[in-house]
Image (cartoon, rainbow, N blue to C red; front, top):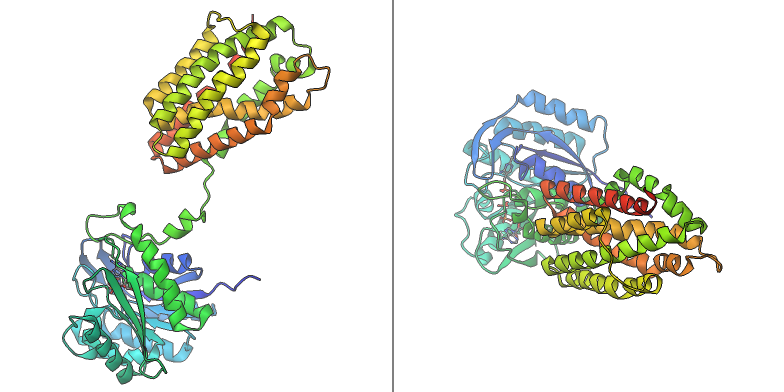
Length: 482
Ligand SMILES: Nc1ncnc2c1ncn2[C@@H]1O[C@H](COP(=O)(O)OP(=O)(O)O)[C@@H](O)[C@H]1O
Ligand SMILES: Cc1ncc(COP(=O)(O)O)c(N)n1
């Protein structure tokens, strides 16, 4: 059964750097499984270092935006962020009273992480009066102090006491947040003076990061999204906190801005395969012509049919033996460059297998003597060597076509390996499932490397891959090319 996707509206200000405000809300809603919508209260010229200026559109236009959404869409949850001034608060309050959304989370935004004000001081009382319109409010330590009309709390007990006072005074559940306090753990608590258990604590490890811009925005949007389906504030907050802690851990890796950077809203989704990339699959499509040309080459069609002259076959094998010496050397070089132990082992094993298995088969046909290396073979090996000299990424991309094209061609050749086929033992080797497995493993490594590479490196990988594919084709064609 599929769960309905909640339609969640954020009413908030903007952050052009995408870490806070409405931009963060939309990412958070999506990351937590909702469909995000957005009504802009204020346009904020800000970045990770601070707020430069605020432009507030006319209140009548805010009302038009709100009505455009509610006249058309059934709203499952609302998250309210920056309201900025009294006129904005009044329009939102009036709209909430009329539309009565089932879930309302109000993040009483007053001051940004950078310390800049996002609510004019004369609007503080209007914001307090809006609190009962929400099901949950999510103030940070300084905001809670303003709502409680007290000094900012210095310890967690004081935070909880203020949250209880606000909850009792305004008849609303409060998510008290301890991000602004010190300690190896961060404390939050769901505080509801009217509940059987008025204080329910949530404790999480403190992530050592400066990427905390927009945590409050992101958290409140996540809670609104979960609450639409869970209908239990504690469960919704707990789910959201788990997501936020993981997103905080990966924020710094985004390398956005010089100040307090954003959290990585989709880190969990990305690492668990939410977004699939298929770089090598795309490369494979792009060499379709080279592959078709190789398949149609008289050497391979003759090999499959068993009509290939024996001289051409032994010439091919002798050059292939020379090639495999070079190939094994390049695989060893790739192994030496691999940072990951499993990858290092894979390439070393490949190098050893080249030398052992395949050379044994070669010897049975050619007697194992060395021959003069043909220009075609020389050119291919030179390309492989220079690729691995350029780096691990280029090296592994260059060795991939040999694995992959052989496994691919091998499956078709193996199908032609009848008992009487003159080249039977050769055809069977490349149709062996272990060969296909090794090719798939090599591809998975190259895929990982390509995914992690910067665009310039990925482009060099593609060039190395394509050139190798062209060498593969030329290598098959050589024995029958006069
Ligand atoms: N360094 C951190 N490690 C883990 N969680 C954090 C960290 N900083 C903030 N949080 C969490 O992010 C949420 C918002 O935190 P807080 O800083 O208190 O509010 P705001 O972002 O509104 O100023 C809270 O759930 C808090 O526990
Ligand atoms: C438009 C807008 N809304 C809210 C915040 C608060 O950000 P934080 O969650 O870091 O306190 C912000 N910087 N900008």
